Image (cartoon, rainbow, N blue to C red; front, side):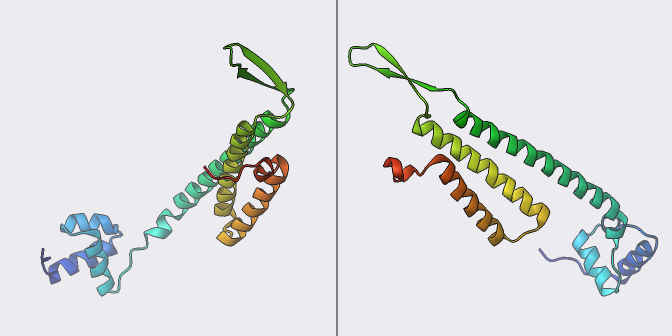
Length: 174
C-alpha cells in the first residue's frame, strides 16, 4: 500500500498545531495521519514533541508505585520461603503410612521429612528466592552475572541446608 505524499498544507498545519502545544497523537488524528508520520514530518521540520517533560511527574510517581509493589512482593516471597523452611525444620515428626501386603496399614513416625517432601519444599524455597533476586535486580539495576553469582551462592546454601540429593542416591534425573 502506497502512502499518500505529505502536502505543504499538512506541513504548515503540523507546524501551527505544534506551536499551539498539541500532542503528536492529537495532531496525527486531526490530519488523518499516523503518529509515526506526524513524527517524521516534525523531524523534517526540525520540531520535536517534548511530551516527556509534561508526563515526567506521572512517570516518576508510577515508578515509585511499582518499586513499592516490588518491595511488598519481596517481603511476601521471603515469608513464603520461611514458611516452607519452617515446615521442613520445625515439625515434631513426620508420619507416613505404609500399606502392608495383607492390606493393613502401618503408621511410621520419623524426625526427617520424606525425601520427596523435602525436595518439593526446597524447590519452592529456591523458586521464591530466585524471584526475590530478580526483583532485587530491577531495583538495584545489577548485572545478570552478579545475580547469577548470588543465585549460585544461594543454591549452594540450600544444598548445605537440605543435604545433597546425590548423597541419598538420587542423581537428579527423572
